Length: 279
Image (cartoon, rainbow, N blue to C red; front, side):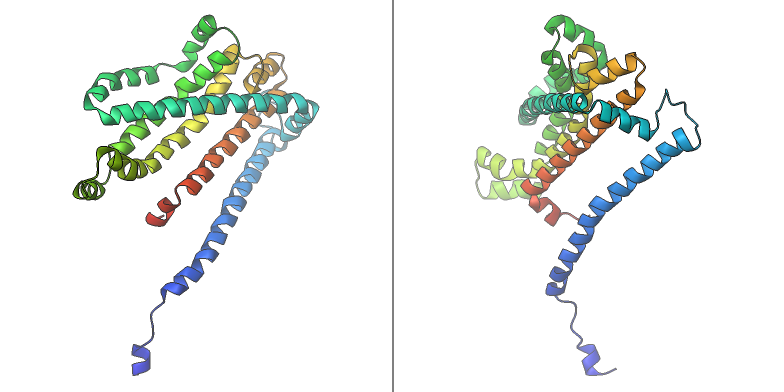
């Protein structure tokens, strides 16, 4: 073995930097190709069950071609209903986000407040929300008020829990650093506790987003005068299951798009999280 072999330079940081764009490109391609492949597999299985092997009656689960034809026949109405449900989902989600973060802040700020109201919050979350639908209609009437209330009731609890958990689990070394710098309580909250809690808060937001869509559809079942939930009830009531399934698929697509929009927002607002955590 020669001295040249012993002196072979190790891989330099520049090599690591050069490999990052390649890994990112592969990750981006995988983020698009793999979900698309999953959708293709699901559609093929759906076709096999309904048309190829005919394991399910078309009245229960229409084949993909029938659902596509139903969507084409009622495209304008279904797209308008999708817009209605999307707006209700977003408005209810924003309201629950504001209220959930504020309640989480109150729980994290005071042990007394936490002990007083945590059991009540758990009790409210444990009540089956669909059982409250008729009561909301009686108290608020038809329209968006009971729908938004249903969205709020379904998705505010994960936001409260994630906010309180994030704010009360600040890394000890960061808290000690703030104390050593004689930071005020507000400075500690703004510079240390809140940034450290944001990843956990986004976890709650990502859990709550699909629940908001579920709440909007359940509210439209009970009190809607439009929207995808209303379309599902009306189409299913007259035996038009193809249109009902088209509306269900639109609900799923809307939920997926809103969820990944939240994921993109997290990556843009918290770029340091991906840099400081391992896969």
